[in-house]
Length: 149
Image 1 (cartoon, rainbow, N blue to C red):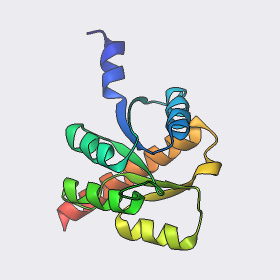
Image 2: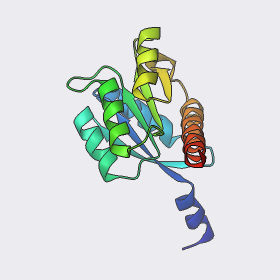
Image 3: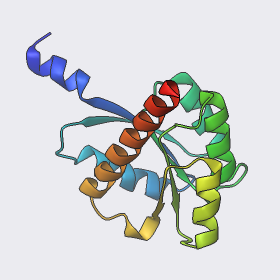
């Protein structure tokens, strides 16, 4: 393996996108493929919560984006399920919603989401990459702090 190939593997993150809207999944995937930061992204998509939970269990996921409003398990229940699977509260999860209310934002935080994004505000690959970097760093810091207590 060349040094470039080795660096690409080291700088790859796996992102799970859970959304019942295929157009939104395609949009987020396209944005993440266009990032020019230090990481490249392997993207796994799920069109419902059940598929998303299965993908989370079967893969080493670095960050998960979950749509709030989905049939079956909604986004909050999905975030709760992911937290239970991981066995701790430091899972980098971002809730995405088209309904930017304080109630949803507060419920997302209580469920364990580390960030909250309004769908219409997602406009660039750099924006998504900043969110990913932020929640992964926060989760890592929380895990380190928890282990030292």
